Image (cartoon, rainbow, N blue to C red; front, side):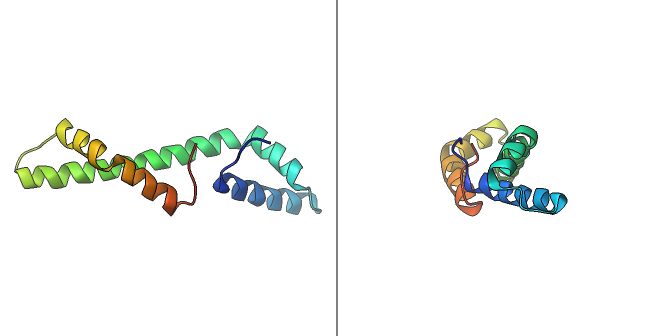
Length: 104
């Protein structure tokens, strides 16, 4: 079994519950794991990553707006690069702590 994040393990447990309900008996973790990996893992990971990127984009745009307001003109790409150099690592650490584990 590959190394799974806590979030993936929770999703497999949830998947196991629904498969077991549908089957009328406990299908077992291994069966749920194999089914989830084969049918759902790729989409789940893509969706999770897309949500993380959208949240990060919102933070960058918020920073750009605030800094541009302070400067009284649009800072454009410079504000984006500023956010990346000053806050990207902290934001990623916050995100991982907030959501319980890393994405990749």
